[in-house]
Length: 299
Image 1 (cartoon, rainbow, N blue to C red):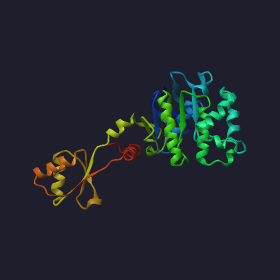
Image 2: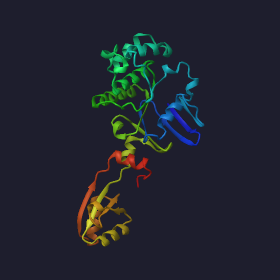
Image 3: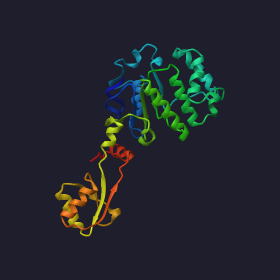
Image 4: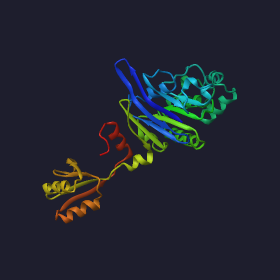
């Protein structure tokens, strides 16, 4: 298990991460989400002891990264800022890493095949696309066959086939009982991959739950208009509905959150109010995500 406990990291006057706490569980893919600059990479770098936290900690099964013997055999990581020597081939890059990880040379070809780069093993990395570099980063993280994976923006630069590949790979690894933590600034890119979501903005936690629970938090929305806009507004107030003006549907139209179209229609019938529009709105998961990261909440 990965446990982030009251993590804070300040860079002079800038607080990149502020009292952040969450867990990533074994056998599950946890999406670590937030806008660019929200503190995701700083959190991952703190976990790997690449930066020293101002306060708090990150542990792996209760142990901080520096205290783990041969950590690359237990924890694999690919950070967004990873760089590769452009003159080396993919195979040479992994062969350079293999002794430091503690794995035999043959493991290099195994992971290149696993990430779909076997035929490009002897191609220089300087000729790689961004997506191919991303695959090589994942291959580097998998060298030690770790039980924990930390991947920073792993879908960056991937085409649709590549996104499907990384999704299948991560789901398979979670199915083997591994702990997977992946960061992204777009929920839509990982919503078919993750089991749990941790959402941060400005370095602070704004939501943590299973993906299913996040979906369940979406309340139905309905566009409502009537021949008598004032009476419509009074009806919404009398039922204590969450209603806001909705100009795209015309003067006096409301966007009502919570009650179903059936409930609104029944209320209008009881009040003798003639509706001219009653249309439900689909609330997408991405809209929920943006409301949370923009500070609007889910009300």
